[in-house]
Length: 218
Image 1 (cartoon, rainbow, N blue to C red):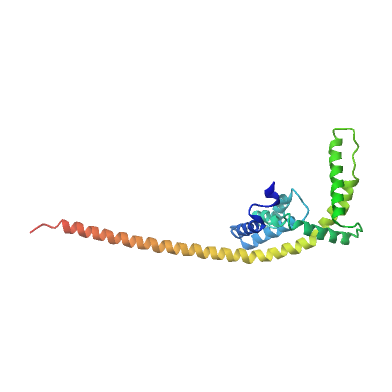
Image 2: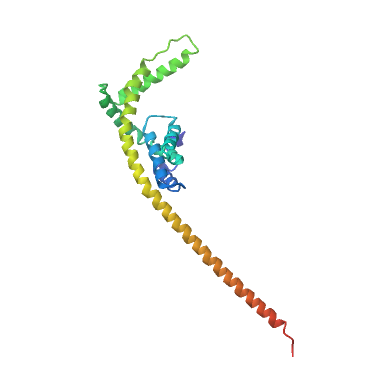
């Protein structure tokens, strides 16, 4: 549970690991970048629990790298998400013309009422209680829908920025890796050549000693 909130080694190390894995993906830079775009865009949207599914589906539609899309969803974390969420909900309120005040108390109250309604409706299945939808309806119209609408445009442009950043990173890494592989191959070829020459020289010396020892004595 702690890993879900704060990864081992901190967010900086986790971010470096994700970037490292993205650069090492054995695919074309544009396909990796399309996967990153899909994953980042889905990561910005309020889709808890199903981000991997939607990210993989969008990457498949865009013909991007699916594993890159899964890694791209890690742009949402407990540190950055609250700030982005408040900004997205505020933008959504402005776009939808909602006058409901947006502050910590209002958001907490909306979550609390929705949670109470959800629990009451679940327990109502096994009891004689009546279901209530007022809290869930208020949460849907004042929090979730504005969040979703307000996160689309910022999420799209931020993901587009990640797309253009990924291409040169992956291309540079693959080029450097190919150079290292080629250099390693050349070193191995030179080593094999040196070993072959040394083996041939030793064989000639051994044959020379053998011929010298087989000559008749005067």
